[in-house]
Image: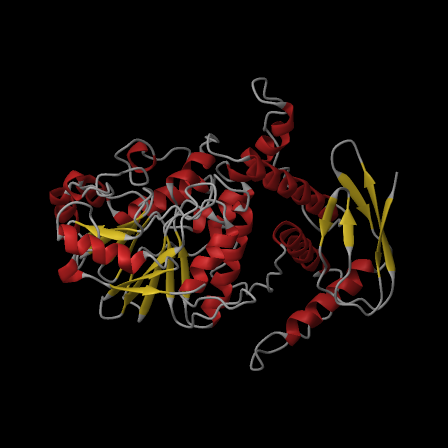
Amino acid sequence: MCLEVSLKTGVDSIPLKLLNYSVPFVPFKFLAQYKLKIFPLIKYPIIQFPPNFFRIILQKKNQWENRNMEQSAPKSTDPLTCENLPHLLSSFVDTFVDFSVSGLFFPKQNPNSNFSNDAVHSPPLQTVYPSPERLIAIGDLHGDLFKTKEALRLAGLIDGSDRWTGGSTMVVQVGDILDRGGDELKILYFLEKLKYEADKSGGKVITMNGNHEIMNVDYDFRFTSKLGLEEFRVWGDWYCVGNSMKGLCDGLALAKDPFDGVPSEFPRLKEEYCEGIRARIAALRPKGPIATRFFSKNVTVLVVGDSVFVHGGLLPRHVYYGLERINEEVRDWLSGLKEKVSLDLISGRNSVVWLRKFSHEVEENCDCSTLQHVLATIPGAKRMIMGHTIQARGINGACDNRAIRIDVGLSKGCGNGLPEVLEISGDSKLRILTSNPAYRNRYESYVKDNGKDGLGLLIPDNLPKQVEVNA
């Protein structure tokens, strides 16, 4: 049976339904009406296109992009030829699949940009940055896109249309985007969009690997939700549709099947979850499309000015091993360039992404002496900022504010806490931006009754100013 899709003349938004999935719109104008025919096969559909279809849509895509380029940027005048059609077709298909999965349109990439999807040709990971005028640190997000946007709006980083408004601000997200929620891929794509927009404004968005990214790449799906499995199942179908579209062009190399080698059955798993698990393995295993595109670009350890960022924590042996070396080895494993990575970096209670020695809510249970030693071995470091362990009382500090804990459990699937972010200004002053109206009263009560003892809240003599922000 054949399913027809109409593309009508002179409209910006074109309803499009492929198989069982609805896509809100395709952001291209078309000169004439066309009909695509999609023939479902045993597993993946093949799409039959009318003559000159790609020629017209690619021309229109290029025109649309040129209108949105900076006025000073030279416009491409290269004619559409048989030689460059395969590359343009591949670019269009990738854009089409990205949009179908995320609902976002990604601009044309500059070949010299830092946003290549090919890990082999990507620039080296940068581990150390100077202090920016303004830095925002965001904790674990766990598949909750709505709360992610709330946290970004708290810091004035996006507007009501979800566009970057942070100017030259640097943002660090400390990992754990995956698991516990159904918007994992949407968050990955959304943050990638913000990376483009921030880069154009002189800002920067840095994402890090957490233990849940590592677990999924290592085939550990214990904390995956049903919605998360469905999101990846849909991704898998669209990705294969894209490969089928590319297969219609003789000038393109045969696309690799991401499901190659993935088991087709899982005897101990309910049948309704099998396709989602298969897609998750295909996407997230080392060298998988999602692991390569997103996680291999993440850092695992980061130093910005006098702040050290890590998902779990660092021990002296991690610093001696080398922060740059940690980032490189984890990246090479994620992108399939290296078969194994040291378990001391990614697995076990004392690994970089699992450590909790500095995250206990009761300060006396934190290993402050070890933390002080670690910071002393990193030039200029004054504090370590980490996620991983939910802080029921919100963002707080311990060990004389050498340990700043920013995981507030904001995801609906993981505590459903109110969003909070940490702001660090150029002179190293800290503020907590919160949507919790009870925050200030809560802290004042704690200071009056307990002084510096007990729970490791940001201590009075070093207290950053708490600012309530209505998101």
